[in-house]
Image (tube, rainbow, N blue to C red; front, top):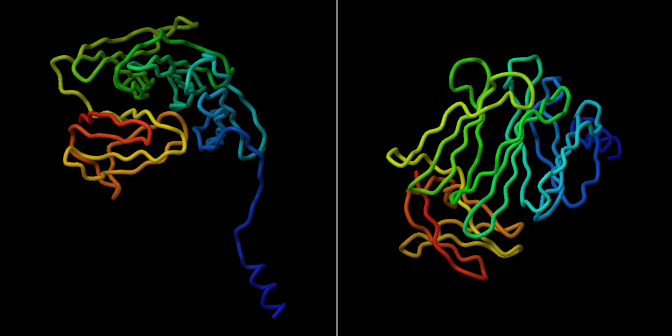
Length: 253
């Protein structure tokens, strides 16, 4: 029996390779920012408020970059992605932060040079009544990614495109601006729902049917328009009950 157990242990190919403590934060997989073509571990420290982002290499198992939240009263501070934005050999990292104070969001984003770990550009502050989320994409074919962000409300919004135009901190500028009053409103990535930490949030349709139940880890959460069976729901009016208050949300595609 002991020999059999030893063989089972020998041929069990999985085990803990390494570990590290995390207090008041959580770990996710982030983009390659140090040029080794491997994803990094990103620790997002803070609870209701995100204090900093810490990048850890899976090769060296050491932290190599800490980005503190420069906006002390903002709720969130997170990574969007890392791509080439200015045409040099190094990638750029897009990070954004936001705060919510009913009924609107405040948002800024920063672009960091991954080689020097310095700020290349900081956006002005945007105010939006829908959740604003910057995107990275090469939309003009110049092999340099642009930052695309929309803000406003469901009826009247503005889409901004930022791109690289030259050297220095002023090298990024607004490349395009378009009002979307007369255009179809694109799908919202997520819908903001106020929540009470530790309480379930129940989402119902107009007929009162339960569509999704979510658990709040902080004072807000986001619903991606997916029901409890993993299927996207139809656009329209939905209602939430967070255990403390009830309200209406509008999902627009």
